[in-house]
Length: 428
Image (cartoon, rainbow, N blue to C red; front, top):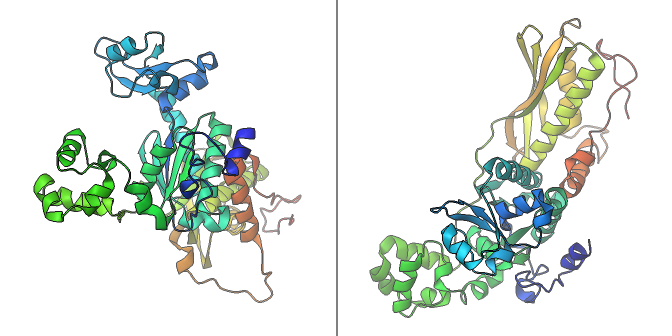
C-alpha cells in the first residue's frame, strides 16, 4: 500500500517510473495524451512466480528446456545476468546456471491475460491487444467517469496488482508509438506520461533503433550515415533517407521521428449489439430467481453499453425452455438507453407474458440498434429528476473500475410481491 501511495504522488524514485524526470513523470500534463500502452512485466515468469511464491526473488526463466529451446520470458532477477527473451536456453543456462528453468504453461498465461484484459475493458471498450501481455487503450471517452489518463493508468496498475498479483508498466501519450516507447522506458512496474507538447523532447534523444520498423541491420545502415538518434533522423535530408532505406520506409520513419502516428486504437471487433446470458445448473420455474437473474444480466449489459459509449433502442429477451425450444421477444423503446434499470424493466415485461408454468433452462438479455451516446439526442421528460438512474449506475461503474465489479452488485429491484401479473415492483 505504501508503494501505491508514493507512486500516486509522483515521488517514486525507481528507475523507469518517471519520477526522476518531472517532464515525463506521473504528474506531467496528460491532457493531450489519451493513449495508453500497458505492458505486463516479465509476464510468463511473473505468472509462474505467482503460482510458486517460493520462487519470489530468484531468477526464473520460462521457455524450451531442451537443447534447442528458446527463452520465452525471464524474470528481472534473471535479466541481471544477461538473460533475454528469444535467447537460446543453452546460452541462458551458461549465463545464469542457478536460475529456475520452467517449460511454458500457456493455459495459465491465457487465463491470466484474459483477466488482465477484462480489467482494461472495465475502463474502456477501445482495447487493442497486441499479444497476451500488452495492449493499447484509448481512454479519451473514459475521462468523465474515471478521471484523466494518468489517473486511469494508476487505477489499472493498482487493480492488476491487487487482483492478479502481477505488475505492469504503462506509457501515456498522444499516439500509439510514443505510448509504447513510454511503457518500455517505464519498466519495470512504472508509469511514464509524455505530454503532447513534449513529444519531440522525449523522442529525439532516443537511439534510432527505438523506431518501429528499424531492426539491427536498418539501424546499422542509419548509423553509418551518422543518424544515431531519432532526432538525427528527423533532421536528415529526406532524399538521403529515401536512398538508404527506400521510399516507403523513409516516409514511415520520418513521420514517426517527427512525432506523427495517425493510427487509432482498433478493438478486436465492432459490436452491433451487446448482450449477456446465463444457463441455469438445473431447469427452473421460480419467478423470483428468474427475475434476479434478468436483473444481473441487465446490469452487465448496461455497464458494457456505458463503457462502449453506446445506447440501444431495442431490448431483446431470449428464453430457452427445458425441452430446448428457444423463445425470442423484443421491444423497441421510444428513446435509446444504456441504463440497467430500463433494460431490466423491459426484459421483465417481455418475460411476464410467457407461460408461467414452463421450466427455463437459459435466459439472455440483449440490446440492439446501437448508436454513440453523443450522437443520440436525449428526450427530456416533464417532471423527471435532473439526476437519476444513469448517474447512479455511472457512479457504480466508477467504483467497479477501481475496486472490481464483483464488489458492486446491481441495485435490488426485487419486490415482495409476485410481479408476473404485471404489478409494479417495490422501488428501492
